[in-house]
Image (cartoon, rainbow, N blue to C red; front, top):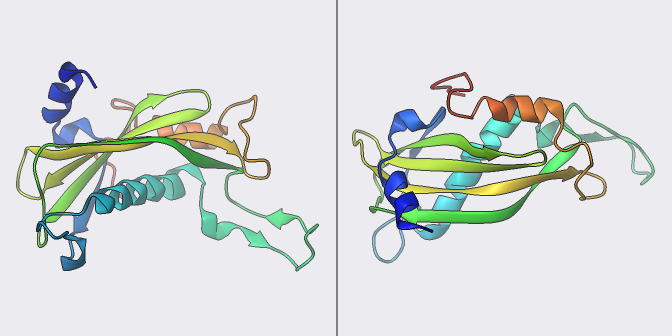
Length: 176
């Protein structure tokens, strides 16, 4: 990544992110060096993204209800007919956090394509303004049954939900 992009990420503030969630770190989150283990960041990013997808995009995996044991039975669902497949992830670390820190996670969409979205998550310590970590990943939306992209791109209700995460796209400071 170009130094200019890294410097821009280091200057992120909470207001750069549309949706926020609080995470209370656990003793279990620390690694042997007494800071948050790298794998915890991936879990945090996944959790905030999926919270949004469930609440705002109709991608609730718990609303799928398979009727009967016959494999030809049609699934009844209120959920989107697509799933997001992760094709890329990244994480840039600027400062450590550790248990017992309380974190403020911010989410926004960095890029919205016809069938893909790149999310960005900022990690802040509660009570501090400097961003500690900026990371995220890219989803490509594919048909649930074939696991292949569709010619039509992502479903309209998914797109509308994700558009709310584009800075300036509305729902500023959204909380679930």
